[in-house]
Length: 266
Image (cartoon, rainbow, N blue to C red; front, side, top):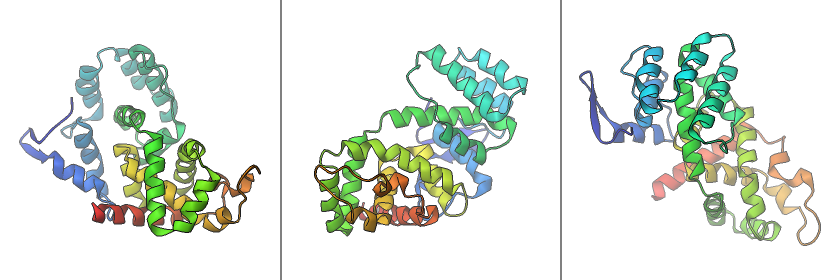
């Protein structure tokens, strides 16, 4: 049930391409009063400004008819939002045979921060489900290639050293998720960071993830260049995922810079 082109909702004409472009901009955030309808439009579940309980009944049940039990869980109000959301997601995966899709608590935490009201729970679930679908289509190998491309253009010495540290590339690919989650969790959601949050969670952009990874590596440049290669094990304190002293604000600012450069080049 994806929305393509321009659609009309109760007389409101929405240009989905324009909305997607707005969300995709890395230089400015979507105004807070537009964030909810923008996300709805891009996900193809525009609620037409109705109460989200009605949205849940009219949209989610229409798309997944076997989620009637989720409605009961949502309506009980007995658990805090993360617990309710976790129960709904687990039930949905079991019902739809998607038992191998992991629940990412950090993503749930991010979405709950952005939409904290209990009336948003169904909407947060829809976003999370779409996020998981998109993330399953991302190839970590391509993210590593994009990361190396960003670094190679700006810091050839660091790029050559990374190739010596991780010649197969698989170790680097395996750390991508933990790096991003670590800095997302520490940065929270504020100011200019909002756009990169939205691009990662909503669009699951490979280029955005690569920009984050390149930023972490560049911010750890001195530590990485001083590390050994060859048969000697890489010390734990050299790994960017362990570099707790790095400022999340600095990492995000560098990632936005890389994203802007990539958008201009495209």
